[in-house]
Structure formats: C-alpha cells, structure tokens
Length: 386
Image 1 (cartoon, rainbow, N blue to C red):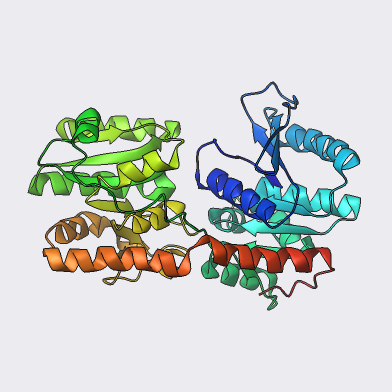
Image 2 (image 1 turned 90 degrees about the vertical axis):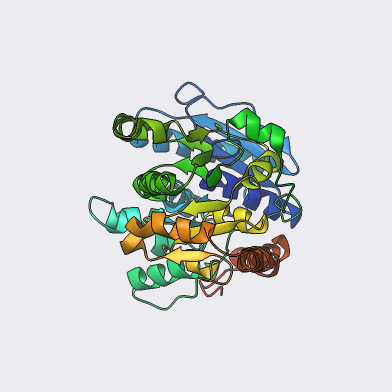
C-alpha cells in the first residue's frame, strides 16, 4: 500500500489508510505500507515498524514530487525484491495512486486505486492534471471509491460503465459511542463556559471543510446566545491569515475558538465529540468524512453540507441535517434552529444517527467488500467488481 500520509499523521486519508491496512491484514494478507514523511531527510528510509500484521516503511520527501516519486520507485523495487508483492494498493489517486499503478505495471503486478474525495475533483478541473487522472483510472486493475457519488464521477470520466467498488469509511462504534455529557473537568480544561452552546468541528479545519462558513456561523450564533467553537484537531497553518483577519474584525468571538491540537487517541476524540451540542461539516467538496460518521456514532447532531458522499450518511431531518453546498451562508441560521429543537426531536435524531452507523458503516461490511475486491484482484480481475 502506497499512501501520502499514514497514522499517526493528520487527516482523514491517514486514518482511513491505517484502518484499511489493518482490515486487509485481518483478512490474512501481509501488508507493507510505504508512506511519505517530512520528518526524515529527503530520500531516507526509516526502519520498518510492524504492528498487527502491517509493516510501515516511511520515506523522506524531497522538495518536489519529481524527485520524490523517482526515488520512491527505487524504494518500491527494492522492497519488491525482498518481499515479493502480489498486488499494489494506491490510497488516494495522486500521488499515491498514480505511482502505485506505474510501479505495478512496471513489475507486472495487479493494482487497485482508492479514490477518497477531492482527489477526483482536484485533478479533473484546471489546473489539475486531467491526463494523469484518466491514465491512473484506466490503467489500474480495479478502482474503489469511498462513496457512490465518487463512483458516479469515475464512470463519467472514463465514459464507460465499469463497476467501481464502493468502500465507505467505517467506524468502531464501541469507541465512538454516546458518553457522559457532563464532563465538567474536560469542559473546564478546554475553557468551555458552563452555559456555552458547543459547536464542534473534528479534523483539520481549512477552506475545503467550510472554514469561512463555520466562522460566520459562530458570529451569528454568538449574537443569539453564549457559544464556543471546539476544533477537535487543528487549523491548517495556511489558514492562519484568514483566522487573523477574522480575529481583528471579531476579537470577542475569536476568543471563543478553542483548538485541542491533534488528538491521536480515538477514545479521546470521542470524549471531545460528546461535549458538542452540534457537529459542523459544511464541506465545499468532500468524500465521505470519517468525522461525520464518528459524530453520528456518538449520537451527536450533525449539520453538514450535501457535498460528495455526505448525503449517503446524513438523511436531512431524520438523523442529521444537510445544507445545499451552494447555500452554506445559511449555516448560522441552521445551527440556531437546531439548538432550539425540542428535546424529543433532538433525541430522535441522535438515536437515528447512531442507528445509521450501526446499520451501514460497521467493520464487517467493509471486510466483506475488501475480500471481494482483493480476491478479484489477484485472480485476474476484469474491472467488474461491484
């Protein structure tokens, strides 16, 4: 498996790669993960670490992808000589998916690429590399996507009706579960006031995830009642200029933005999610975010956009709320309306959210789909996995 980022690195791609590698290992495969990192000198290969049947090799990035991919090809060929791979998995279409297909075709191996979200959107529109996107999808032995929405896009791009495997994200519902809502010590540590309405966001907050709309919503909600924004994760460094401009315009509201920093432990993430009155995911574009499913598993009320595969999990008014991605300026109004819901309506939505995860996004379903995909891959798949 080749992946740009791998746990404990930040981001949904990192977490989904770690979960997928572990799931494949449990099916009886020996999984070798090659992951790029900026923590090593360029071209350096870290000592492999094996845990639960997954061996991770980290490779230091160069300052540009040309050098990084050329050197990584050398590393992949060296590892293939040592371990003799049967198949190659590219997690995210570029750069990992593209290089996985190049390596697999060079070595005469079958390959599968996993589209995760904005990898398709980013490459299909200028200034994305459309030619490389199409080549990767056409030359891979099989293609999987995190949502039905992405599968439809792949079919549109390839202009033929190949059956793409849909492998949605899944959640450990024993970890992400409703918890004690009166976690007074944690609330105090974070700086949450006793009468604050807690608006939550989980992950790496940036423009793609709706940063401008979340900030505007926070201003609107703070005009209606006491509130705070709890960022369970980090704000991407390149967004600091946006955040500084916001703080200059709304200093008192900016003081109510509480950022935990990266939380590596899933149980700790769940504890923070259970502090939230609503969890926001107003993505401009997306796949099927882990954070939405994790919040729903914790019986939180999610207010999300209808981007990507989110509507495949969030049924508006039943187990959460979905705002059209073209009208995300209405997020603040939606938050206030949800905070004003009668108790019986809120409880019904919370219970339905968790039931949806238990029914549709559990590990056993993922294992069955992975088994089907991998069996077809090594027996000469004709790109007809469904």
